Image: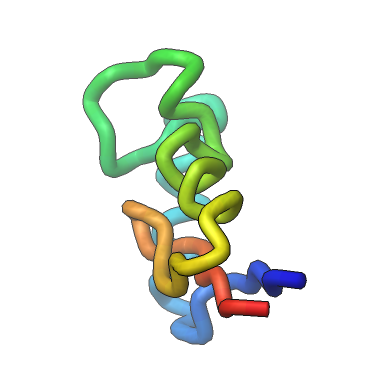
Length: 67
């Protein structure tokens, strides 16, 4: 089973969480405030479902390790 964790860089996590707070939970790295961009965004949910994907989400808040 895959493991999802926060970025190990505490400053990155702090910056992204502040951005999420300012945008009401929408990805601070995206312009559009659409349901697809609500954290955890659709793009990363799809990557989480992909057994071959390992890496960070678009904004670098989360990291998916292969399971």
